[in-house]
Image 1 (tube, rainbow, N blue to C red):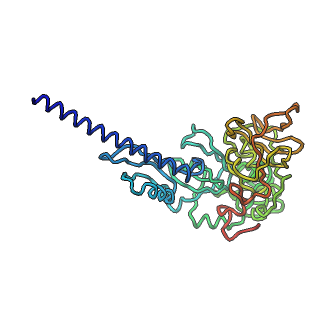
Image 2 (image 1 turned 30 degrees about the vertical axis):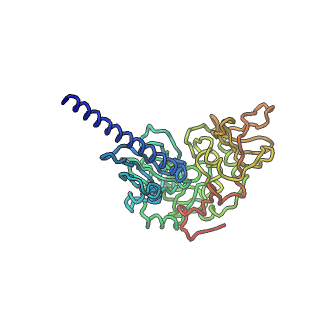
Image 3 (image 1 turned 60 degrees about the vertical axis):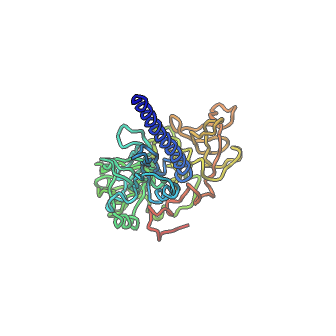
Amino acid sequence: MRRILTTVLVALVTMIAAATDFDFDVNRIDINKMLSDLKAREAPDSRVAIWNVAVSDSCDGIPVVRGVVGNFSQKGKIVDKLRGVTYVDSVKVLEDAIPAEKEWALVKLSIATLRCDPKHSGEVATQCVMGTPIRVIEEVGEWLRVQCPDDYIAYVPESSVIFLSDKDFEAWRQSERYIVTVYDDRLVTKPKGDETVSDLVLGNILQIKNKKGKWLELSTPDGRTGWVQKSSVEEFDKWAKQSLDLKKIEKTARRMMGSSYLWGGTSTKVTDCSGLVKVSYFSNGVILQRDASQQALTGKKIADWHDAELCDLLFFGNSKTGRVTHVGLYLRDGKYIHCSGQVKINDLTPDAPDYLYSPLSISRINGMIGTKGIKYVRNHDWYFFSGFKCY
């Protein structure tokens, strides 16, 4: 009899434990589904938003929601979504996690490489050139997770930037600056000298220190000073007021003909396909999204390449799935320039000897600046104090 009672008790305990595990599993699945649906709505693109939250385990049978989000607004969305649900909240918010004196930074190298993970062996995500303002989100050892002016999020070595407090950042935005407008150059120790302070590339932003004839003494974000010819730079305020000039964008792209491909490259030294497009438009004061698949969601859609105009964006990829994997700039007469192996020109006409690829879609930037994903540098508060506007 005692053996029978023992067997029954063991069976009951097993059933209760199984039921508890079952209930937890169901709750975990339900909560993860709710979180997944919320992420799809609030932060669908991990390249521009931080959102990594899920049920990871339980505490006394209660699901624990763990992970990280970028800001308190996102955390508030989670709290609202799970209202009425019993769970343990262990979600970390990165906003305001950085000390005030490190909230902003400027790239101090001619080109800084940003990676997908905080390590030098990590995949290259993008590049930022000297003087690019970036928002610091998180410190990870000797690396910083940062957000770029195009909203792209990646990791950069702390040694590649100089930190700015809010006060310093405001002063920089209102300072007299110059931007490099040539393909590349050098900052040298004295006029007509040959000793290099730093290499320079298109888009580098430096502050003015002195003027001497045809030469300017400029300062890098980390305080190094040197000289460069006036013809290689332009006053940043004046440059930012330029009108859209498609021929200038074309000229920049053609200047890069023959240069090599680098995944994540976003400078005149090396680019990937979307990097070529970004650099070319930035030379005219326009900020585009980082990746081809992001750029494809912007601008005015053009149905047929025969209706394409100069510097329209041509997107290529899988015709069955519609997945965009490549982008180029339309030139004229069916020709387009792109970076595939190297920067080169190909033709959209199927029977042309230099035919390569047929576009999945076409986006026109002309007439669409100010819409989602397309912005003038002059209207970006990270570059200029909010009082500066020039339309």
